[in-house]
Image (cartoon, rainbow, N blue to C red):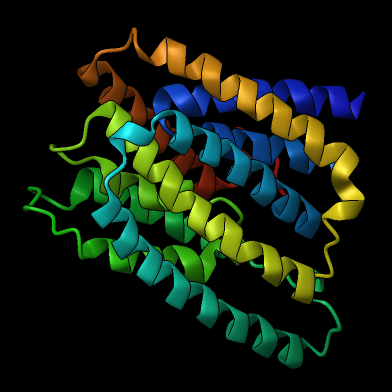
Length: 254
C-alpha cells in the first residue's frame, strides 16, 4: 500500500514541479518521510528520484537551457560538494560514529526559510544580476544538499530574473539540481552506507511515475501565462519558506 501511495505522490508532485518549476520535490520529501522510517534513507532515495524528475524536466524543456548559467553553477557545486565530504567526515569523527546516518542536520532548514523570505521581500530593489552569481549558488547548494535533502527552494529565487521565461526557469533550475543530486549519490553510498541497487523495487516504479508526471505537467504549462507562472512560483516558494521555518506545519519530515 505504501508503494502505491508513493507512486501516486511521485506522479502528482512531478506534474506540479513541471508546471510551477518547484514545490513537488519538497512535498514528495514530506510524504516519503511519513512512509519510510529512516531519515537518511528518505533523503538518499528522494535524491535519486528527484534526479530523474529534474532530468526529465531538463530534457523535455532542453531547447530552453542556458549553458553558460549551468556551467557557472557546476563549478560552484563541485567545490561545495567536495567541501561537504570533509565536513561529513569531520562530524563523524567528532561524534565518534561509524556511519553519517546517525547524525542529524535539521537546524539548517529554518535558516534557509528565513533567507528565502528575505530574498523575495526584504532585500530591496533588484540590481542587474550577473551569471557569475551562480558559482556562489552552486557552491552553497553543493555544500548543504547532503544535510537538508531538497535545495530547490534555496536556489529558486535566483531564477526569478526578467530575462528568463517560464520554460527557462523550469529547464535551468532542473538542470542545476541534477548536478547536486548526482554529486550526492557517491557521498550517500560511502558515508551513509546506502545501497541503491537493493532499493530497485521502490526506485524503478517511482522513476516511471515522475517521467509520466513531468510530461503531463509540460502539457499543462502551455496554458499558463508568464505573469501567472511567476506569481505561482513566488507563492509556492513563500509557503515552502514558512514551512521550513516553523517545522511541521504543512508536511511531516524527519
